[in-house]
Length: 516
Image (cartoon, rainbow, N blue to C red; front, side):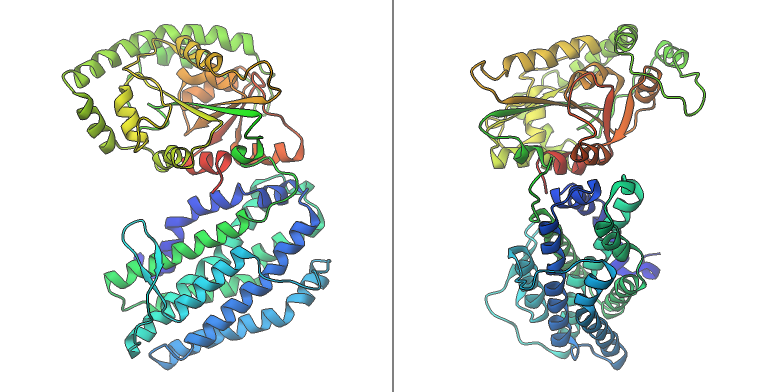
């Protein structure tokens, strides 16, 4: 399968979900999807395509003769000719097919220049690759290029261009198919359709990947590691480009939208079902029977109004089953933690298996030191020292609760803990700022907190939570759709609204709150 697909396909599958997520939550693409992007911002972004294409052309001209046989040389020549045609047709394509004029004078912006420098440095073999997590680094001096190394340089250059067309296609296709595309103005529709469906873009993306696969066919494991890092770095630079196209009006990311001096953002997260990849299974027969008894018996397609009072009553019944379950968890956790020192807890936390992206999210908050963001984590399985160790590298610098082992006996007590946190972090009465509360959870025990938060985010897919929610009229909306509707002015962040936002990864949460 790997040989048939080639490294280009493997790299794309490995990185597309996370990087696509970061790009889709950028203000630029959220505003495109919502149909209210500032026209000057859009024109500026499109004008940068010309500079990207020029960079491709220059890079291909540099490495065309590097390939070690005529067939490979022909592949690069064909790519160069395709890019050359696109450059010559760029102005007419924008004017005739998309229906608007570009600025008369266009210069590359900082992120375009950053990508161009990276691509041309790759083509000139003026880059190296650092250790784990360091990415692509500049070399002190170019190395002498042997014929075999020249072929590698050509492949590395293709790795720096391959994700560009593929990511554009992917992002535009998602906006067209998954979001409220019917309200998008024509000027955006034509641009989205071109990158999604045009044979020109499809062929360029496929031909670039085919060429990369053939030039790297004889690569060693070390060569492939370098190729992969270059591919990923190129993709991250492209996401950075979208992130720097800032519209005048935007609703994301929350950490930048909200006034850092007159607003506060409190994030309260469950640890057991949202952070930890180690799940405690303690379903009771009675609990299952109860959940079955409230399974919706409605006509397919019927929309129920949100019944907050009914949901609260149901959660009281759920609490009775949770008490027994949590008692067993407490006994198990107590036995597990018995005799474990503070240092032992910290060491265990470092090795704890977490959901992908979870640790990175909390560590980014720690490193950036957002002054108006408070983070609280709740658990009935793990102690505070272990949680702090698992989520951050500096336990003293981040306000992560609890400070000791805490067992939430039922969903209502978890709600009490949530409300106490909010009480303790109220903005003073003299301030006119807004206090936005986010709760991130994954199970039925989180339901009370989810609906009481301004933004309730459901991580993963709990059948029990959905059954209970749908029975009482709760709507489960993908977070990205919710963000786009917020940008359109069709929804508002507020508690008890009957809307919960679903995510499948921590990358979505990070992109929404912190950005890429």
